[in-house]
Image (tube, rainbow, N blue to C red; front, side, top):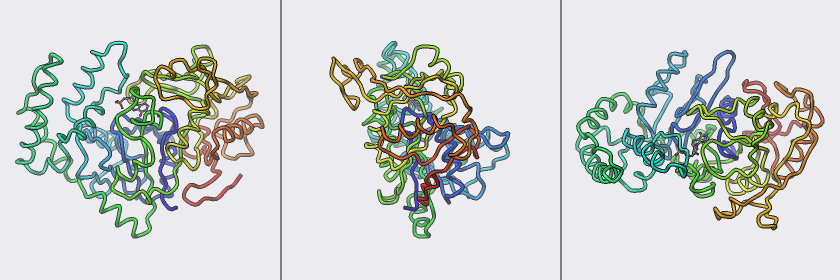
Length: 434
Ligand code: IMP
Protein backbone atom coordinates (compact mmCIF):
# COMPACT_ATOMS: atom_id res chain seq x y z
CA UNK A 1 0.00 0.00 0.00
CA UNK A 2 2.20 2.86 -1.09
CA UNK A 3 -0.46 5.48 -1.78
CA UNK A 4 -2.70 7.24 0.73
CA UNK A 5 -6.06 8.95 0.29
CA UNK A 6 -7.05 11.54 2.88
CA UNK A 7 -10.75 12.27 3.18
CA UNK A 8 -12.98 14.08 5.64
CA UNK A 9 -14.96 11.70 7.85
CA UNK A 10 -17.51 14.33 8.97
CA UNK A 11 -18.97 17.48 7.36
CA UNK A 12 -15.68 18.93 6.18
CA UNK A 13 -13.30 21.31 7.99
CA UNK A 14 -11.78 18.42 9.92
CA UNK A 15 -8.26 19.76 9.47
CA UNK A 16 -7.34 17.86 6.30
CA UNK A 17 -4.96 20.57 5.10
CA UNK A 18 -2.60 20.19 8.02
CA UNK A 19 -2.61 16.39 7.82
CA UNK A 20 -2.09 16.39 4.05
CA UNK A 21 0.76 18.87 4.39
CA UNK A 22 2.28 16.74 7.15
CA UNK A 23 1.95 13.52 5.15
CA UNK A 24 3.13 15.14 1.94
CA UNK A 25 6.66 15.10 3.33
CA UNK A 26 6.54 11.33 2.74
CA UNK A 27 4.86 11.61 -0.70
CA UNK A 28 6.16 12.44 -4.17
CA UNK A 29 2.89 13.84 -5.49
CA UNK A 30 -0.34 15.30 -4.07
CA UNK A 31 -3.56 14.98 -6.06
CA UNK A 32 -6.91 16.78 -5.68
CA UNK A 33 -9.68 14.60 -7.13
CA UNK A 34 -13.02 16.31 -6.38
CA UNK A 35 -14.59 19.58 -5.28
CA UNK A 36 -13.26 22.95 -6.24
CA UNK A 37 -12.46 26.23 -4.54
CA UNK A 38 -15.30 25.59 -2.08
CA UNK A 39 -12.65 23.82 0.01
CA UNK A 40 -10.68 25.73 2.61
CA UNK A 41 -7.44 24.25 3.81
CA UNK A 42 -5.35 26.16 6.33
CA UNK A 43 -1.69 25.33 6.82
CA UNK A 44 0.32 26.85 9.66
CA UNK A 45 4.05 26.50 9.09
CA UNK A 46 6.26 28.41 11.49
CA UNK A 47 4.91 31.94 11.60
CA UNK A 48 3.30 31.71 8.14
CA UNK A 49 -0.35 30.79 7.54
CA UNK A 50 -1.32 29.59 4.08
CA UNK A 51 -4.95 29.37 3.03
CA UNK A 52 -5.59 27.08 0.09
CA UNK A 53 -8.86 26.41 -1.69
CA UNK A 54 -8.02 24.80 -4.99
CA UNK A 55 -4.35 23.97 -4.95
CA UNK A 56 -3.27 20.67 -3.41
CA UNK A 57 -1.89 21.20 0.10
CA UNK A 58 1.48 19.79 -0.96
CA UNK A 59 2.30 22.91 -3.00
CA UNK A 60 3.90 24.69 -0.09
CA UNK A 61 6.60 22.03 0.11
CA UNK A 62 9.27 22.39 -2.53
CA UNK A 63 10.07 19.33 -4.62
CA UNK A 64 6.59 17.79 -4.60
CA UNK A 65 4.43 17.45 -7.68
CA UNK A 66 0.85 18.71 -7.47
CA UNK A 67 -2.05 17.50 -9.57
CA UNK A 68 -5.61 18.72 -10.05
CA UNK A 69 -7.57 15.78 -11.40
CA UNK A 70 -10.57 15.63 -13.72
CA UNK A 71 -12.92 15.07 -10.75
CA UNK A 72 -12.36 18.68 -9.67
CA UNK A 73 -14.33 21.65 -11.05
CA UNK A 74 -11.88 24.42 -11.82
CA UNK A 75 -12.49 28.15 -11.62
CA UNK A 76 -9.51 29.41 -13.67
CA UNK A 77 -9.70 32.91 -12.19
CA UNK A 78 -9.70 31.53 -8.66
CA UNK A 79 -6.73 29.34 -9.61
CA UNK A 80 -4.65 32.26 -10.84
CA UNK A 81 -5.59 34.38 -7.83
CA UNK A 82 -4.50 31.61 -5.48
CA UNK A 83 -1.22 31.10 -7.34
CA UNK A 84 -0.59 34.87 -7.13
CA UNK A 85 -1.43 34.97 -3.41
CA UNK A 86 0.97 32.14 -2.64
CA UNK A 87 3.59 33.80 -4.86
CA UNK A 88 3.34 36.89 -2.64
CA UNK A 89 4.05 34.60 0.34
CA UNK A 90 7.16 33.26 -1.38
CA UNK A 91 5.69 30.01 -2.73
CA UNK A 92 6.17 29.98 -6.51
CA UNK A 93 4.07 27.55 -8.49
CA UNK A 94 4.86 26.89 -12.14
CA UNK A 95 3.85 24.34 -14.78
CA UNK A 96 6.85 22.22 -13.81
CA UNK A 97 5.21 21.49 -10.44
CA UNK A 98 1.46 21.81 -11.03
CA UNK A 99 -0.46 19.72 -13.56
CA UNK A 100 -4.18 20.14 -14.24
CA UNK A 101 -6.13 17.47 -16.09
CA UNK A 102 -7.12 18.57 -19.58
CA UNK A 103 -10.56 17.04 -19.05
CA UNK A 104 -11.31 19.15 -15.96
CA UNK A 105 -14.63 21.02 -16.31
CA UNK A 106 -14.42 24.77 -15.74
CA UNK A 107 -16.47 26.87 -13.35
CA UNK A 108 -17.53 30.00 -15.24
CA UNK A 109 -19.02 33.23 -13.87
CA UNK A 110 -22.58 32.17 -14.87
CA UNK A 111 -22.20 29.09 -12.61
CA UNK A 112 -21.45 31.30 -9.66
CA UNK A 113 -24.33 33.62 -10.51
CA UNK A 114 -26.72 30.67 -10.83
CA UNK A 115 -25.58 29.19 -7.51
CA UNK A 116 -26.21 32.51 -5.77
CA UNK A 117 -29.51 33.24 -7.54
CA UNK A 118 -30.86 29.83 -6.58
CA UNK A 119 -29.80 30.18 -2.97
CA UNK A 120 -31.45 33.58 -2.75
CA UNK A 121 -34.64 32.27 -4.34
CA UNK A 122 -34.74 29.25 -2.00
CA UNK A 123 -35.16 31.40 1.12
CA UNK A 124 -35.40 29.24 4.25
CA UNK A 125 -34.84 26.01 2.29
CA UNK A 126 -31.46 27.10 0.95
CA UNK A 127 -28.60 24.59 1.11
CA UNK A 128 -26.14 27.13 2.44
CA UNK A 129 -23.67 26.55 -0.40
CA UNK A 130 -20.37 28.37 -0.59
CA UNK A 131 -21.79 30.30 -3.57
CA UNK A 132 -18.79 29.38 -5.72
CA UNK A 133 -20.77 27.76 -8.57
CA UNK A 134 -19.73 24.23 -7.63
CA UNK A 135 -23.16 22.59 -8.01
CA UNK A 136 -24.04 24.20 -11.37
CA UNK A 137 -20.60 23.26 -12.77
CA UNK A 138 -21.07 19.60 -11.83
CA UNK A 139 -24.57 19.70 -13.31
CA UNK A 140 -23.09 20.87 -16.62
CA UNK A 141 -20.47 18.13 -16.50
CA UNK A 142 -23.17 15.47 -16.16
CA UNK A 143 -25.34 17.35 -18.67
CA UNK A 144 -22.49 17.18 -21.24
CA UNK A 145 -22.36 20.91 -21.76
CA UNK A 146 -19.30 21.75 -19.68
CA UNK A 147 -16.42 23.72 -21.10
CA UNK A 148 -13.31 21.77 -20.17
CA UNK A 149 -9.76 23.00 -19.79
CA UNK A 150 -8.58 21.54 -23.11
CA UNK A 151 -11.43 23.33 -24.95
CA UNK A 152 -9.69 26.65 -24.30
CA UNK A 153 -6.93 25.68 -26.74
CA UNK A 154 -9.12 25.59 -29.83
CA UNK A 155 -11.35 28.54 -30.91
CA UNK A 156 -13.71 26.35 -32.97
CA UNK A 157 -14.31 23.90 -30.16
CA UNK A 158 -14.84 26.79 -27.78
CA UNK A 159 -17.52 28.30 -30.05
CA UNK A 160 -19.37 24.98 -30.21
CA UNK A 161 -19.14 24.49 -26.46
CA UNK A 162 -20.40 28.03 -25.87
CA UNK A 163 -23.44 27.30 -28.10
CA UNK A 164 -24.49 24.36 -25.92
CA UNK A 165 -23.67 26.18 -22.72
CA UNK A 166 -25.67 29.30 -23.58
CA UNK A 167 -28.68 27.40 -24.97
CA UNK A 168 -29.12 25.80 -21.55
CA UNK A 169 -28.14 28.67 -19.28
CA UNK A 170 -30.03 31.43 -21.03
CA UNK A 171 -33.25 29.42 -20.74
CA UNK A 172 -32.59 28.86 -17.03
CA UNK A 173 -31.73 32.49 -16.44
CA UNK A 174 -34.91 33.59 -18.17
CA UNK A 175 -36.88 31.47 -15.72
CA UNK A 176 -35.07 33.15 -12.83
CA UNK A 177 -35.64 36.61 -14.26
CA UNK A 178 -31.94 37.21 -15.03
CA UNK A 179 -30.47 38.78 -18.15
CA UNK A 180 -29.01 36.45 -20.81
CA UNK A 181 -25.27 35.76 -20.71
CA UNK A 182 -23.13 38.27 -22.58
CA UNK A 183 -21.56 35.76 -24.96
CA UNK A 184 -18.92 38.12 -26.37
CA UNK A 185 -17.76 39.13 -22.90
CA UNK A 186 -17.60 35.50 -21.69
CA UNK A 187 -15.69 34.42 -24.79
CA UNK A 188 -13.28 37.33 -24.46
CA UNK A 189 -12.70 36.51 -20.79
CA UNK A 190 -11.97 32.88 -21.66
CA UNK A 191 -9.61 33.88 -24.47
CA UNK A 192 -7.79 36.20 -22.12
CA UNK A 193 -7.33 33.60 -19.43
CA UNK A 194 -6.50 30.68 -21.76
CA UNK A 195 -2.77 31.44 -22.21
CA UNK A 196 -2.39 31.80 -18.45
CA UNK A 197 -3.95 28.45 -17.49
CA UNK A 198 -3.20 26.24 -20.50
CA UNK A 199 0.49 25.86 -19.58
CA UNK A 200 -0.71 23.83 -16.57
CA UNK A 201 -2.91 21.52 -18.69
CA UNK A 202 -1.63 17.95 -18.89
CA UNK A 203 -2.81 14.36 -19.34
CA UNK A 204 -2.82 13.84 -15.61
CA UNK A 205 -3.84 10.18 -15.92
CA UNK A 206 -0.68 9.55 -17.98
CA UNK A 207 1.63 11.42 -15.62
CA UNK A 208 0.19 9.50 -12.67
CA UNK A 209 0.50 6.21 -14.51
CA UNK A 210 4.18 6.97 -15.19
CA UNK A 211 4.74 7.91 -11.56
CA UNK A 212 3.09 4.68 -10.47
CA UNK A 213 5.45 2.65 -12.63
CA UNK A 214 8.38 4.47 -11.02
CA UNK A 215 7.09 3.46 -7.58
CA UNK A 216 6.32 7.04 -6.55
CA UNK A 217 4.14 7.65 -3.50
CA UNK A 218 0.93 9.50 -4.24
CA UNK A 219 -1.20 11.33 -1.69
CA UNK A 220 -4.81 11.91 -2.69
CA UNK A 221 -6.30 14.97 -1.00
CA UNK A 222 -10.05 14.91 -0.49
CA UNK A 223 -12.11 18.05 0.05
CA UNK A 224 -15.29 18.53 2.11
CA UNK A 225 -16.28 15.36 3.98
CA UNK A 226 -18.06 12.03 3.68
CA UNK A 227 -21.26 13.46 5.19
CA UNK A 228 -21.36 16.01 2.35
CA UNK A 229 -21.07 13.25 -0.28
CA UNK A 230 -23.73 13.63 -2.97
CA UNK A 231 -24.80 9.98 -2.50
CA UNK A 232 -24.15 9.17 1.14
CA UNK A 233 -24.32 12.60 2.75
CA UNK A 234 -27.32 14.30 4.35
CA UNK A 235 -28.95 14.91 0.94
CA UNK A 236 -29.89 17.49 -0.33
CA UNK A 237 -27.71 19.38 2.17
CA UNK A 238 -24.55 18.12 0.53
CA UNK A 239 -21.99 19.21 -2.01
CA UNK A 240 -22.30 18.04 -5.64
CA UNK A 241 -19.40 15.60 -5.81
CA UNK A 242 -18.51 12.22 -4.37
CA UNK A 243 -16.24 12.97 -1.46
CA UNK A 244 -15.32 9.35 -0.73
CA UNK A 245 -11.98 7.67 -1.39
CA UNK A 246 -13.46 5.76 -4.35
CA UNK A 247 -13.59 9.08 -6.15
CA UNK A 248 -9.80 9.39 -5.86
CA UNK A 249 -9.46 6.80 -8.62
CA UNK A 250 -12.03 8.12 -11.09
CA UNK A 251 -11.32 11.74 -10.25
CA UNK A 252 -7.65 11.41 -11.17
CA UNK A 253 -7.58 8.72 -13.84
CA UNK A 254 -6.01 5.95 -11.78
CA UNK A 255 -7.57 2.54 -11.17
CA UNK A 256 -9.15 1.72 -7.79
CA UNK A 257 -6.10 -0.35 -6.81
CA UNK A 258 -4.02 2.82 -6.78
CA UNK A 259 -5.71 4.28 -3.73
CA UNK A 260 -4.08 2.13 -1.01
CA UNK A 261 -4.56 3.30 2.58
CA UNK A 262 -7.58 5.51 3.28
CA UNK A 263 -7.07 7.95 6.13
CA UNK A 264 -10.26 9.57 7.42
CA UNK A 265 -9.89 12.89 9.21
CA UNK A 266 -12.25 13.53 12.11
CA UNK A 267 -12.40 16.29 14.67
CA UNK A 268 -12.63 15.25 18.33
CA UNK A 269 -16.06 16.94 18.21
CA UNK A 270 -18.30 17.83 15.24
CA UNK A 271 -18.89 20.95 13.15
CA UNK A 272 -20.97 21.78 10.13
CA UNK A 273 -21.36 24.88 7.94
CA UNK A 274 -24.51 25.46 5.96
CA UNK A 275 -27.94 23.96 6.54
CA UNK A 276 -28.99 20.35 7.15
CA UNK A 277 -29.37 17.75 9.87
CA UNK A 278 -26.84 17.68 12.72
CA UNK A 279 -28.15 15.47 15.55
CA UNK A 280 -25.44 16.20 18.14
CA UNK A 281 -25.46 19.97 17.57
CA UNK A 282 -25.12 22.06 20.75
CA UNK A 283 -27.04 25.29 21.23
CA UNK A 284 -25.61 26.05 24.67
CA UNK A 285 -22.50 27.54 26.25
CA UNK A 286 -20.47 24.40 25.50
CA UNK A 287 -21.27 24.75 21.78
CA UNK A 288 -20.14 28.40 21.95
CA UNK A 289 -16.99 27.37 23.78
CA UNK A 290 -16.10 24.74 21.15
CA UNK A 291 -16.62 27.36 18.41
CA UNK A 292 -14.42 29.91 20.17
CA UNK A 293 -11.60 27.57 21.24
CA UNK A 294 -11.68 25.81 17.89
CA UNK A 295 -11.82 29.06 15.85
CA UNK A 296 -14.75 27.59 14.00
CA UNK A 297 -15.22 30.06 11.20
CA UNK A 298 -15.20 28.95 7.56
CA UNK A 299 -11.91 29.44 5.69
CA UNK A 300 -13.75 30.19 2.44
CA UNK A 301 -16.88 32.07 3.49
CA UNK A 302 -16.04 33.21 7.03
CA UNK A 303 -19.35 31.75 8.22
CA UNK A 304 -19.68 30.64 11.84
CA UNK A 305 -19.64 26.85 12.02
CA UNK A 306 -22.27 24.95 13.96
CA UNK A 307 -20.65 22.90 16.76
CA UNK A 308 -21.60 19.74 18.64
CA UNK A 309 -20.37 16.55 20.29
CA UNK A 310 -18.55 13.80 18.40
CA UNK A 311 -21.11 11.60 16.67
CA UNK A 312 -19.63 8.11 16.75
CA UNK A 313 -22.65 6.59 14.97
CA UNK A 314 -22.15 8.89 11.98
CA UNK A 315 -18.38 8.42 11.84
CA UNK A 316 -18.84 4.63 12.07
CA UNK A 317 -21.14 4.98 9.09
CA UNK A 318 -18.63 7.00 7.05
CA UNK A 319 -15.83 4.57 7.90
CA UNK A 320 -17.91 1.88 6.21
CA UNK A 321 -19.12 3.89 3.22
CA UNK A 322 -15.75 5.51 2.54
CA UNK A 323 -13.59 2.45 3.25
CA UNK A 324 -11.50 4.21 5.89
CA UNK A 325 -8.57 2.21 7.35
CA UNK A 326 -7.50 4.66 10.05
CA UNK A 327 -8.57 7.97 11.56
CA UNK A 328 -6.53 11.12 12.09
CA UNK A 329 -8.18 12.74 15.08
CA UNK A 330 -7.77 16.50 15.13
CA UNK A 331 -8.39 19.34 17.58
CA UNK A 332 -8.39 17.19 20.69
CA UNK A 333 -7.05 20.24 22.57
CA UNK A 334 -10.34 22.10 21.98
CA UNK A 335 -11.93 19.73 24.52
CA UNK A 336 -9.35 20.60 27.23
CA UNK A 337 -10.90 21.87 30.46
CA UNK A 338 -14.38 20.40 30.10
CA UNK A 339 -15.77 18.59 33.17
CA UNK A 340 -17.36 15.93 31.08
CA UNK A 341 -17.48 15.03 27.42
CA UNK A 342 -20.32 13.43 25.57
CA UNK A 343 -20.19 11.09 22.59
CA UNK A 344 -23.21 10.42 20.38
CA UNK A 345 -23.55 6.64 20.07
CA UNK A 346 -26.89 6.29 18.25
CA UNK A 347 -30.32 7.89 17.87
CA UNK A 348 -33.76 7.56 19.32
CA UNK A 349 -36.49 8.05 16.73
CA UNK A 350 -40.13 7.66 17.77
CA UNK A 351 -39.03 5.68 20.81
CA UNK A 352 -36.92 3.25 18.77
CA UNK A 353 -33.11 3.04 19.00
CA UNK A 354 -31.16 3.32 15.75
CA UNK A 355 -27.42 2.62 15.49
CA UNK A 356 -27.10 4.54 12.25
CA UNK A 357 -28.76 7.67 10.87
CA UNK A 358 -31.60 6.62 8.55
CA UNK A 359 -31.66 8.08 5.04
CA UNK A 360 -35.24 9.39 5.10
CA UNK A 361 -35.28 13.13 5.78
CA UNK A 362 -38.39 12.86 7.99
CA UNK A 363 -36.65 10.36 10.27
CA UNK A 364 -33.41 12.37 10.32
CA UNK A 365 -35.36 15.39 11.50
CA UNK A 366 -36.73 13.41 14.46
CA UNK A 367 -33.41 11.77 15.44
CA UNK A 368 -32.49 12.49 19.07
CA UNK A 369 -28.91 11.58 19.92
CA UNK A 370 -28.19 8.94 22.55
CA UNK A 371 -25.12 9.92 24.52
CA UNK A 372 -22.42 8.24 26.49
CA UNK A 373 -20.66 10.54 28.99
CA UNK A 374 -16.96 10.40 29.82
CA UNK A 375 -14.93 12.44 32.32
CA UNK A 376 -13.04 15.39 30.85
CA UNK A 377 -9.49 16.53 31.70
CA UNK A 378 -8.16 19.78 33.09
CA UNK A 379 -4.61 19.50 31.69
CA UNK A 380 -3.66 20.99 28.35
CA UNK A 381 -3.18 18.60 25.45
CA UNK A 382 -2.22 21.43 23.13
CA UNK A 383 1.02 20.79 21.34
CA UNK A 384 1.45 17.23 22.69
CA UNK A 385 3.79 15.29 20.44
CA UNK A 386 3.86 11.93 22.22
CA UNK A 387 1.06 9.64 23.26
CA UNK A 388 2.62 9.57 26.76
CA UNK A 389 2.18 13.38 27.05
CA UNK A 390 -1.60 13.07 27.04
CA UNK A 391 -3.63 13.02 30.28
CA UNK A 392 -5.14 9.64 31.15
CA UNK A 393 -8.71 10.89 30.60
CA UNK A 394 -7.82 12.11 27.10
CA UNK A 395 -6.31 8.72 26.24
CA UNK A 396 -9.46 7.07 27.59
CA UNK A 397 -11.59 9.33 25.39
CA UNK A 398 -9.59 8.46 22.27
CA UNK A 399 -9.66 4.73 23.08
CA UNK A 400 -13.42 4.83 23.58
CA UNK A 401 -13.87 6.60 20.24
CA UNK A 402 -11.82 3.87 18.56
CA UNK A 403 -14.09 1.21 20.06
CA UNK A 404 -17.27 3.02 19.09
CA UNK A 405 -16.24 3.80 15.52
CA UNK A 406 -14.58 0.42 15.10
CA UNK A 407 -11.46 1.91 13.55
CA UNK A 408 -7.98 2.72 14.89
CA UNK A 409 -6.72 6.25 15.42
CA UNK A 410 -3.60 6.47 13.25
CA UNK A 411 -2.69 10.11 13.90
CA UNK A 412 -3.55 12.64 16.55
CA UNK A 413 -3.25 16.36 15.91
CA UNK A 414 -2.93 18.61 18.95
CA UNK A 415 -2.54 22.08 17.39
CA UNK A 416 -2.56 23.69 13.94
CA UNK A 417 1.27 23.53 13.93
CA UNK A 418 2.76 21.03 11.51
CA UNK A 419 4.89 19.24 14.12
CA UNK A 420 2.22 18.99 16.84
CA UNK A 421 1.14 15.60 15.60
CA UNK A 422 1.29 12.21 17.28
CA UNK A 423 1.97 9.44 14.82
CA UNK A 424 0.53 6.09 15.83
CA UNK A 425 0.43 4.31 12.50
CA UNK A 426 2.24 5.69 9.48
CA UNK A 427 -0.32 5.44 6.66
CA UNK A 428 2.51 5.11 4.13
CA UNK A 429 4.36 2.44 6.07
CA UNK A 430 2.04 0.87 8.62
CA UNK A 431 4.16 1.05 11.83
CA UNK A 432 2.56 1.40 15.26
CA UNK A 433 4.42 3.47 17.82
CA UNK A 434 1.87 3.38 20.64
P1 IMP B 1 -21.21 23.80 -2.22
O1 IMP B 1 -20.15 22.75 -2.18
O2 IMP B 1 -20.67 25.20 -2.32
O3 IMP B 1 -22.26 23.49 -3.25
O4 IMP B 1 -21.99 23.76 -0.81
C1 IMP B 1 -22.79 22.64 -0.44
C2 IMP B 1 -22.64 22.32 1.05
O5 IMP B 1 -21.32 21.85 1.30
C3 IMP B 1 -22.83 23.53 1.98
O6 IMP B 1 -23.41 23.07 3.19
C4 IMP B 1 -21.43 24.00 2.25
O7 IMP B 1 -21.31 24.69 3.47
C5 IMP B 1 -20.71 22.67 2.30
N1 IMP B 1 -19.28 22.76 1.98
C6 IMP B 1 -18.73 22.93 0.76
N2 IMP B 1 -17.40 22.96 0.85
C7 IMP B 1 -17.10 22.80 2.14
C8 IMP B 1 -15.86 22.69 2.87
O8 IMP B 1 -14.75 22.72 2.32
N3 IMP B 1 -15.98 22.51 4.20
C9 IMP B 1 -17.17 22.40 4.83
N4 IMP B 1 -18.34 22.47 4.20
C10 IMP B 1 -18.30 22.68 2.86
